[in-house]
Image 1: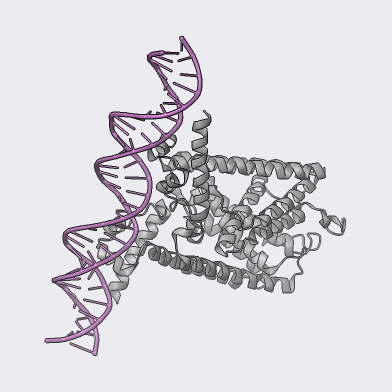
Image 2 (image 1 turned 135 degrees about the horizontal axis):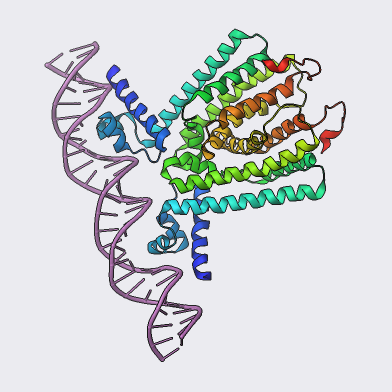
Length: 213
Length: 213
DNA sequence: CTGTCAACTGTACCGACGGTGCGGACCCTG
DNA sequence: CAGGGTCCGCACCGTCGGTACAGTTGACAG
């Protein structure tokens, strides 16, 4: 199976490179064939059509995305214990990671496929939905942990809070692209972090040094 | 000129309808010709190529977008005087307006073209940049007005604050689409509103009824 | 050693689509 | 009446996504 998987992976790699550089529509199948050396028949042996390529690409992106979040928050948990501090530190790590990307975030494939809409079939929408729900579950769990120890200063629905994390990430990627300024993404993540602090942290008078985390 | 402008507008209307329903790539020129009754030569008389159609569409979208913001915040200013209350009330109006859209927000054309990237030429990117900067200037001005009266509880850069408004709007549109739930957009706007309140309003102990605005 | 099967290749072909070129027609304005 | 802006009709092109199908290669089982 090594041979088959290898060809498929090579196609996906080439497609990913093309999509983040030029967009999905501008990345032609013929171009992928030229880069990978695979024949047209070989391509359609692995992918029924271009939509299936897109779906595979998105699924791979989501898996990688989950790995990144897992590792970032695992690292935060190694360093601090308090759930609020874990979250705040994780956001800091996330901002740093985004700031370190030389040409900025290449663009979220979930958002990309949302804006391609009907060009993709229902299965792609389902993959998207599942991804967004995974994000919600992840951040919702962290919110619940935090709220158990720190009463929020304002009434917030747990799912709304969780969605706001994804919202800021997605929105900031768009704004970074629109303004052609990669720094916007990490800055917005840190602003979200301020919101989290304001929401959960006891008033500044009670713990004046708390913002050093 | 009435005849020329009319044809052009009809093409743009048909294109807009197609794009919000199926995406830009899936809206073919031939289809627009069939709907509008314009000939292919007529189309290319008004638009050099499909990219120019996209640019015109985006420009029209941005103008409409600006009109919506103008009217919403003008209405808020008629009802209250304080800059913070104007902003909070405007966000409330905005959330209501987004909640009233029967099938949710059709998608921001600026974000859409960001994700189409190189498929469009540099002029489209320039239009996008200008739109994002207009949003920044608008919300930055409101931030400055507010900050003059209310010292923020946390140090926030004015541009970052302004960008966060756009960020939440763009991100929430994406999340609404990904989760296929139009309610997410208005809910995230109200969550942003909470952040603004937490940031600027004197602590709850000082004005316990302040969240009724 | 042989048959089988997955993993391809090569070639020819198709319709849809974006786009070009050009001659001509209609109609308003000066 | 002349000119120009607006638009039509038609022929044509290259690219792209996708299909059809016969043939080849290599690993592996019996």
